Image (cartoon, rainbow, N blue to C red; front, side, top):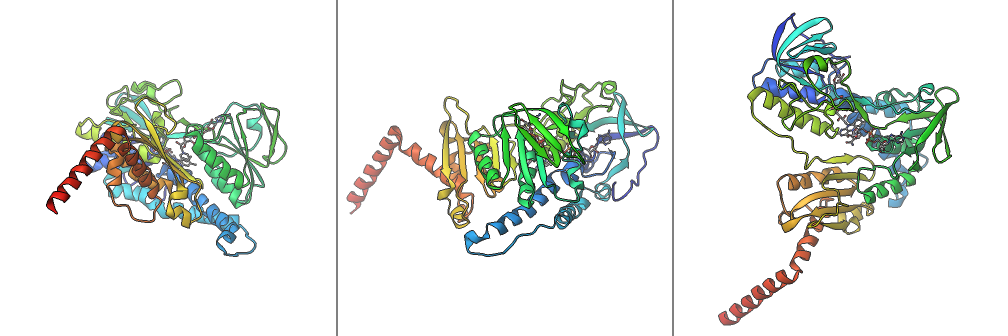
Amino acid sequence: MNAGRTKTAPADDDLWDLLVVGGGTAGIVGAKTAAHLGARVLLVEQERTGGDCLWTGCVPSKALLAAASVAASARTAHRFGVGVGEISVDFTQVMRHVRAAIDHIAPVDSIEALEESSVAVTEGTAHFTTADSAEIDGTRVRFRQALVATGAAPALPRIPGLADVGYLTSETVWDLDELPADLVVLGGGSIGCELGQAFARLGSRVSVVEGAPSILPREDPRAAEALARALVDDGVELHTGSGVEAIEATTGGAGVLRLGNGRQVPFTRLLVAVGRTPRTVDLGLDAAGVEVDDRGFVVVDELLRTTNHHIWAAGDLTGHPQFTHTAGVHASLAASNAIVGVRRKVNLAAVPRVTFTDPEVAAVGLASDTRLPGLHCVEWSHSHVDRAVAEAAVDGTTRLVVGKRGRILGATVVGPRAGETLGELTLAITRGLTTRDLTGVIHPYPTYNDGPWNAAVSDVRDQLARPTARRALGVLVRTRRWRLRRAA
Ligand SMILES: Cc1cc2nc3c(=O)[nH]c(=O)nc-3n(C[C@H](O)[C@H](O)[C@H](O)COP(=O)(O)OP(=O)(O)OC[C@H]3O[C@@H](n4cnc5c(N)ncnc54)[C@H](O)[C@@H]3O)c2cc1C
Ligand SMILES: NC(=O)c1ccc[n+]([C@@H]2O[C@H](COP(=O)([O-])OP(=O)(O)OC[C@H]3O[C@@H](n4cnc5c(N)ncnc54)[C@H](O)[C@@H]3O)[C@@H](O)[C@H]2O)c1
């Protein structure tokens, strides 16, 4: 539950400028933005402010990965001439570290912090009753406008026998008090790869079962292959390209997956990570005139208005890329459109995404296997990035998708700190920068940003090697020589 209780219980029939339903990233950012702009805002949260990112998503998963990374570094320390002896993992301490990370960040998302930002907060479950009113556990509130930000929950596949095993999801895995001996992860997307690698490095025998032909099926296949190799090195067994036909329970949450290709994969614990489904059922969206699509996502236009133009939506329930950064930026955009009447539009051309495994897989803009006229791809191996060489992490790659006149349109980076590297490339794509622009920026040496920088330099060199550019250069060089001779 929330650390603090609401100070502002809404009175029956109270009228608010903005009613925000959901206190995750989108709800918090939307509510604070609207209050900052001078609106009278009520935020309603049914469980605990902070949402999935803080309690069951980004924060705990990255904290678990950090602990797992230390275990992996210790195991491979001999590569650097460092001996550390036998490694042991105390899972209770690991989970204590995970909870400490959550506790550290929680105050930023707390009710107190919202109230300090002039947002009134109430605990309860909201549903819309008409186009301009909602009910919160029996109390009716009215609104001039509303922001729906109820997020998404783990999707559950229809597989015979699933209900008979005590499966885990990204919501319940954080309650584990002992390391599973044999963990099978169903789904090789972001959650499956991150948590699969983390548990393997902490000492579980992990299998990842992915229905598509490869893990991370939405990424460049070469990036997915690089991660697959790293997972196998960590001891993860990968089963790709085959669905699950049935699950047979044995005892105590354990069981066996029967794959379509005839294989059987036994587990002591099963983690289901096959995507997320929007929390839009029981919200009274029909009564409010808010349409959802056939998968339950709220339909929004580019201003983030729903089909009821006084109700806006942002975050995981909209069908936009399901990330904390999109939830936050979109909620701020929706709130300013709602309160000030500006017309800021969603831009999906440069939404960065990072899978925080080792190596990290980071991508933005056009995929690096895009084959379209006028586009080319520049690739730079991290065996020529000095920082990677110094850290013995030369397996990475940077790939830039470059369009006409050297404009950067996409990037995929695989390697340590690829997520940090992606910031500069996201800026480049958002601002329409070229490879030449990137080469003209002094980069600190030695950093992993030398990957994109060298890729950009190589692209500019290729441009200069073209016949027209060579002819023009030749004229310049000859003219310069002639002038120097005359001046001598
Ligand atoms: C394991 C995992 C790892 C992740 N890692 C990353 C990462 O590294 N980087 C990244 O960018 N993203 C990551 N994500 C995704 C990220 O967590 C989500 O995109 C983000 O939390 C979405 O925020 P939101 O505000 O839309 O929804 P949520 O955070 O889900 O918030 C919705 C809130 O609404 C409340 N609510 C629902 N219905 C009602 C109702 N009727 N009345 C009142 N309140 C209601 C819920 O209780 C919840 O608090 C991860 C997700 C998972 C599961
Ligand atoms: N680092 C990050 O930013 C991060 C980390 C975790 C989660 N997330 C967000 O959370 C969302 C949900 O993560 P996720 O990993 O659950 O979803 P996902 O969509 O990323 O991956 C789900 C995977 O499960 C596979 N799959 C679906 N049904 C299957 C079945 N029956 N059997 C086997 N495989 C099956 C899909 O092919 C897909 O590869 C992500 O899309 C992302 O937006 C982000």
